[in-house]
Amino acid sequence: QVELVESGGGSVQPRGSLTLSCEATGTIFSLNALGWYRQAPEKERELVSVITAGGSTNYGDSVRGRFTLSRDYRKNLVYLQMNSLKPEDTAVYYCNARGYSATRVPFDSWGQGTQVTVSS
Image (cartoon, rainbow, N blue to C red):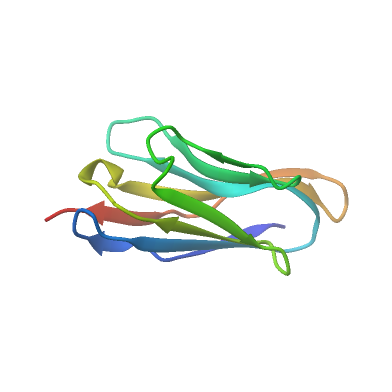
């Protein structure tokens, strides 16, 4: 069973910064993608940033240039550094991991979500 341990989030003023982290734990054979999505009230869940097994990092259009996703390769752990935050970044941020377990069963796991609020 794969579990995602999320940390970070909270409230910040516009133009401020926050860092989220997510660690995938459990019996993992391979991790194909690890990253973050977000969902604002009355909106669909959208990509924030994910990093693939090959090391490629993808960003949503609305965060590119402001957010940076990095990975600790010693662990299945990613950090999302969010700079120049805007009120429209307010959302629940969800960590997502996709890959194969130790028994070669595919998984697509979601964290419980962490609230990010940007407001003056």
